[in-house]
Image (tube, rainbow, N blue to C red):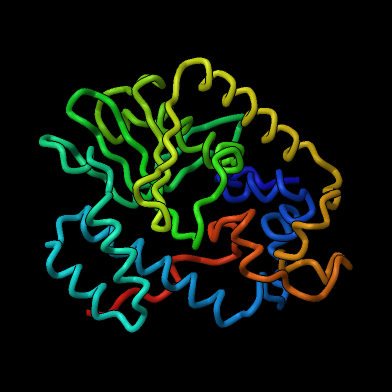
Length: 275
């Protein structure tokens, strides 16, 4: 059984949708299993660090840190890739973020109650536009642009706009209708080709039903079976525990189907760029 104070997020919901056993081991039993998720390990760690550093730069810019200082940090980084990612950001960041009167809320967490549990979302950036619309911006640092259908099928694409529609008033002081919400995935690897998801009342109702059903399934579950798709086990730390292999899948294949958000990483523990 889940504890009454269990908090649902897009991450643990995605784990359940990917593999109920993974959800159980990671989020109910809190099992720590010593295995890497993709190989080579050093390159995986380098890519995660690079993604974290880019998120930090974008966060500092949203807070008002001057662009010249941030650009100098990016260009002086030991990895030339960070400088290239930052230049893509400078040239192609969402135009709405520079509009007069826009209010930016970086790294903000909102939550709502659903099915007797707390459902929370931590946003890379929320932008309240002067015309009343709200833009959800999520920075993605994959080496390649993920497929649109796979992005739209992810729990994140349902949880984020749903939670915003439910909880925006606590942040903005006024309610926000679903049809005023747009979610934008922005890619360092394809900066001129973001994925835009426009929300509406119909999708909000569908998401409420979908997410409520998932929470109810998990809360009532007595067993958490292994996924039937053994392919995903190649990128799971629990594969040897579940007797699904003992060799991590290659990083280049991981990025074809997954996001670095899927990795079992506490982003708060990844070191930031030093001044």
